[in-house]
Image (cartoon, rainbow, N blue to C red; front, side, top):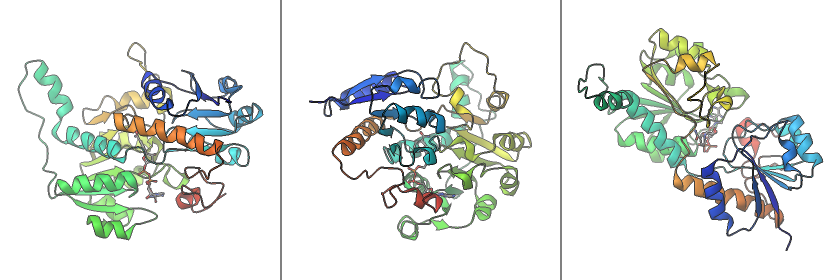
Length: 349
Ligand code: NAI
């Protein structure tokens, strides 16, 4: 039997563990590369028909050319977002599949973790009590019950978060460029425009994809329209927020707190250990100085269940391609595929 080869980029120990466990069912030859996919490393895919890539791998025009010349037929993203892929470059050359959902619960629950920690200052309390300091000055929070949350993007993750926050007794306002009135009726939330979300919500959480229309959605103008002391949560993609504007909002005490699992320039730092290094990125460094900012390193997806689902869907996507089956998780270009780009951007190239 012809063993199919996969060049696996940006492999971390937990990736290898979950893929090795699931690959028993598939039998691919997976070559795990610790380096990220980019111009200098694309050559490592030589001899592999398939490439497995993650959120910070670079899949631009030049990289696509190298992969294509080496005979790569399919890029299997082991993530949901695909803003790092130049879809025009892969068009008619290399198929791209993704894992549209691996655990909306993991991400929504992490967003709730950020909200609770920021509101009740749990991240600060942890250090205080470890130092035998049992003073609670500065830890004053607010009841979430009765407050209003604004959810931008009511897809899989946004809707799970809505259910959880409804459980806290919060009122939910939502914005989505493709609203889902049925879900609104069933779950008891209300669609409105962005300006109303900005002016009425105590907590705003972002769950839309990063596309041209959403780049720097949260900018100086948007922040100006928000309620004083608003809490902003981003577990989606960093560039949804203009970080400089956020920092200004925090300095002006307009923004009460921010929980960020993603950062627009994260690719240099996130997922890596820089504890012995100097951070050259002054914006990230400034962000980390605020007591009311909680940064996590793109870990919202990181649960056992999600890792299993990621590995299984990724390897199934590749098997569907080998078997000539429809690629239900293909990113557009065969317009009509389940995850067609058209739904997100309104056009299919
Ligand atoms: P989804 O595709 O189910 O939902 C996205 C929603 O955003 C859709 O309802 C869509 O109509 C809406 N949308 C599209 N353009 C919009 C716009 N311009 N304004 C407002 N809404 C718009 O995606 P899902 O699974 O809920 O994921 C949401 C995002 O979460 C992903 O795009 C991804 O970037 C991020 N994510 C982050 C993870 C992490 O570990 N931090 C893990 C998984 C996803």
